[in-house]
Image (cartoon, rainbow, N blue to C red; front, side, top):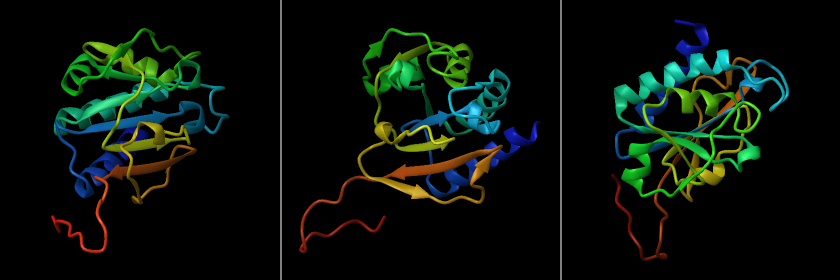
Length: 180
């Protein structure tokens, strides 16, 4: 197993320990393989890096049941590659595009090629997210996102940010909230 795949699996496990992910949850992934290699985002996409990472993400999905959504780049309006079962379970409308390195990015291209029944959706409201290389996944998280600090801040040369979400707190000074 490659060191980056091992490191990514460790981070996903760490995230899962703090915020359990399962078949009722969606994890959005933004990944600049260019940034992982220390290059400018969108300029040096690597299918090899994407292949290492997709193995880790699929292994994590198979272990937890979490639904994966891979964000494409701005050339496809940050549309997301998901499995058709995710589209059906969460009632997401499909859009027509096939992500490729030049329009979608290497990670979205590899996800599309690796999924059993891939499709693309325009937007999603994910429960948690991982942003590898500052790809700006916030638009695809539920409204109240909370940053999560894990043991590592970098994968390769790319800065990594994790987030989980929670329901909005409503009410005023007299409102009470569950303690879990």
